[in-house]
Image 1 (cartoon, rainbow, N blue to C red):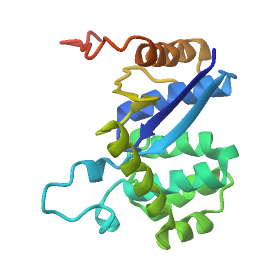
Image 2 (image 1 turned 60 degrees about the vertical axis):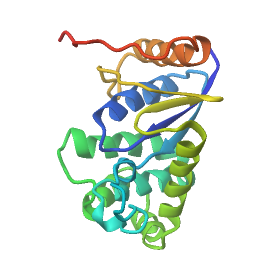
Image 3 (image 1 turned 90 degrees about the vertical axis):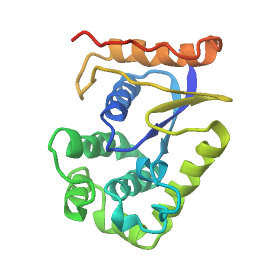
Image 4 (image 1 turned 120 degrees about the horizontal axis):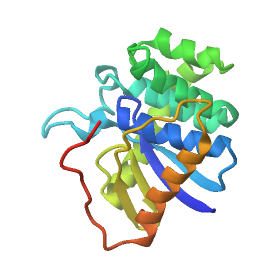
Length: 202
């Protein structure tokens, strides 16, 4: 089934990790989706009034280094973006390492054949930060996006929390069904505004 949508991410969010794993699993299995992966800085979204923007003090934010690296890989090394994307989520959520550690981020890049030095140069020059800022502000302005993962299609956007994961090698059928259900609700049932469980049975 053909779906076209955008989905936001910040590597700090476990729910972004879950959603993006499902999307990556589906795409790897040949799902006919056109997906735009859009960076969104949770640090910037939580800047208090009167405080400096993340864009002005990126070294003070715990997630912006990895987010920039992900965007550079997405744009300049798209063939390995899925693997690097999973790797940067794993760095934070599976390995409990720091997304702000240049050496750790560089290792993820190198492990997947990406020239880490070139990516870090794009970050140090401010080029990567400008890309992240432009897309972050694009979707805050156009769709009032405030968090991750947000699925966006046409003039609609919805924040989604998926509770299960889809690690590399998982059966893609469940992931394809999950993602298409989310997008179908987003595009096909505009009357639904909020549907939230009071508790999550586990």
